[in-house]
Length: 134
Length: 134
DNA sequence: CTGTATCCTCATTGATACTG
DNA sequence: CAGTATCAATGAGGATACAG
Image (cartoon, rainbow over the protein chains, first blue to last red):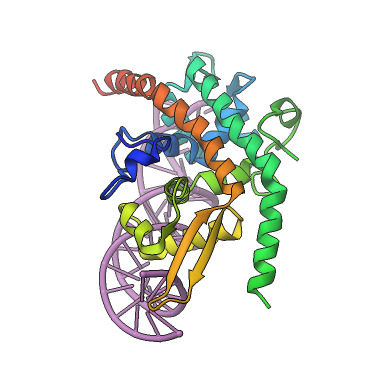
């Protein structure tokens, strides 16, 4: 199995990366974290139990269709749990599972990186743009 | 500014998330990390100085066009540095900048999460599929 | 309220070809 | 070798309408 932590192994020879293998950790990470909406849903659930329409309202710009898809995927992955109540009309509540909670914690490290280094990146972009658009 | 770390603030009232604002850390993270190819390039450069075609060879499945785009973006962000040598034919070497190195380290935390929790996710998926395809 | 189904559009990508 | 340019195809995502 190819991992991002042990590039020395991966780079030894030949086609080193197999992002298409479902067991590849890189692919796993990308599938969970590379999805903007999923990340926002996960975060919105971090401290609250939230209903479908509340999620739709809070996560500005998400469509009903995409929210529904994202929630279904997250539930399938065991990151979010869904509980329906037979009220009328129906009520559905979404919560983070313990697994989902650990993911949001791991993601926090990246967010921290982003916050810390945003100025550096913006400076780099400005410098690059200045040099490349005379 | 809305952050993923302080959802209490974000959730106080109204449309809480502004993923479209360029200053939003969530958006930043997504822009850098949500790109499969960028992540693989970053990783490939983690311990080596690599030439364009070597990257293309090693990162199986990437096209010349996309690799070129990705490298340009990474260079603009100050994560990767490009050095051309006036040999014939031309030689171009890519390296991680110090900033790029810190990003790969932050990403490692997520990869670690993925490796550790992959079994749990796969189990959850299996359970879900079993329950939803009778 | 909580979704599913349909259509449609726009952006990303791959394939291909060409240049410095 | 290291790209850029062009074009077609694929698919994600939005709008809308409707159902349980």
